[in-house]
Image 1 (cartoon, rainbow, N blue to C red):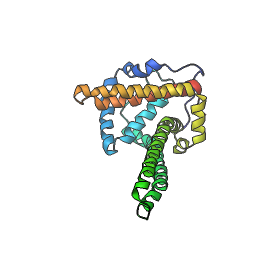
Image 2 (cartoon, rainbow, N blue to C red; image 1 turned 45 degrees about the vertical axis):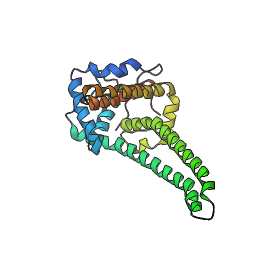
Image 3 (spheres, one colour; image 1 turned 45 degrees about the horizontal axis):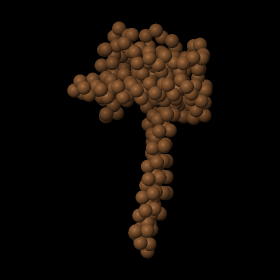
Image 4 (cartoon, one colour; image 1 turned 180 degrees about the vertical axis):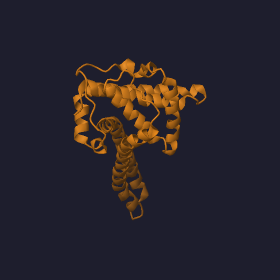
Amino acid sequence: MATAAPGATGGNIDFGRSFTFVGEDPDWIKKILIGGAFTLACAVLVGVPFVLGYFSRTLRNVAGGAATPLPEWDDLGGLFEEGLRPTAVYLLHVLALMVVLAVFGGALLLPFFVLSGGKNPAGAIEPLAALAILALYAVVMLLSFALAAYLPAALMRAALRGSVGDGFAWRENLGFIRDNLANYVLALVSYLLASFLAQFGLLLCCVGVFPAMFWSYLVLAFALGQTFRLGGAS
């Protein structure tokens, strides 16, 4: 699949429109409600490829300069197939993080479990074990934050280039972040703010929670699409 052609380079993304562009589509309510249903289905993983497929198409439409970037829901098979690529990118990155943390945690804590069954008094080991656990928590938080900051770029390049491999081209992904740092950070901030606002769906007795969550994903798709369009892809 060919990469969408970037538009004029330079400038900042339209931060405000990231939150309002959905309402520009005449069928936005129907599309958001359907997306909310698939977001609910993500709890059993069934909805994940559909949501990420829709996310990918929206991102690609924004990057291509479409006037109304929200795609239709009339091609579920295509959305599912397209969503398998970012799903694989997401799950494999998370799995890799879990493996790294498991290996690091085992190497850090195993000596204390071994020593606790030996001749050393437990009282002398417990303070060091507590420090090791705190260090493990710190590493978990640091790596989780790093993955959360990096993963949108990987998902974006996989979506625009239509290749799982591009999602794991970490040099190119980091290069895109570096070359478009200001707009990339704005895109992440827009998603964090949208995710916070989506929590207020609880005020509707949970009826609006999942559509609001789906909307927050589209905010990120729009912001990333703008970032690509203004800065180009590496």
